[in-house]
Length: 78
Image 1 (cartoon, rainbow, N blue to C red):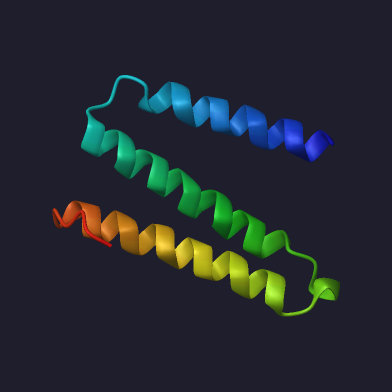
Image 2: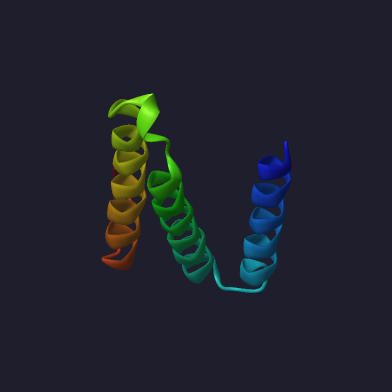
């Protein structure tokens, strides 16, 4: 439960940082935050859980990263 509180605090911190940003910058900041958090989760994913959990976390990180790149290029379709 302590980890949930920590993640909640980090999310609140990210939201405060993006509150005043323009819409595109806010989206970019949120996507970067998601990428960073997923990278940290991938690092701490227990090896005893097998290869699927780190793989799924990495897929989510790659999707967030690609969405960020598409947003930078002005592409909004998925």
